[in-house]
Length: 268
Image (cartoon, rainbow, N blue to C red):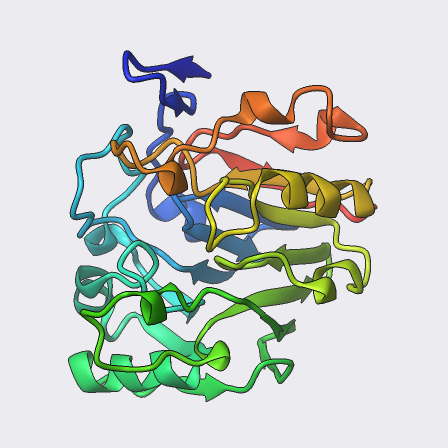
């Protein structure tokens, strides 16, 4: 891990990848896509969560591991909410016809239809669906920051944001999405891996609560996200893994991955 002149923590050098990462494999491999994007290959079933590979409206600290035009096919795309660091116009345009299904909260599903004529499936919080033999449940998220800004003419609802609980044959993955701390975060089944947001922002979980959640599930691997990607002085993009040092039980489970670096999911 390196630190820029502006004191921004950055991940290891990006590991670009291509079509080989979408092939059928024996287990489940995850790749951080930068910021909050995740690629899951479960035995040849390929799913991306919040993939933003272009369209950032600020400079970047890293290279993206692939472009959306290079994606050969996906069984499904999951979107947690409509913020532009999670919802990418060019991704939807460049992968149209290559994605088997789209899953999101109802509002986000409607946006996909309105902007791209994509027929996704909208879900209630706590509802479940499947993609092949992958079982998925929406978890709650509290992230309606837009309601504090006068420029938005829509009142955003709690149910417009979500996380995803993803169960595979090789283990359970929790992608919380962007969210303030919620008591429900402490009532989950034991995840094998958490896609771990730890940035200290008023509309995110915050460092102290992130550590509390991590230590409540002391066996879960932690893949760090929402950090080290955007060249901005905003705290929301500048999580520093150093704040976790000495505070995470079983610290070997904290994984500071390069964008595109493969990580094999293991049941605990």
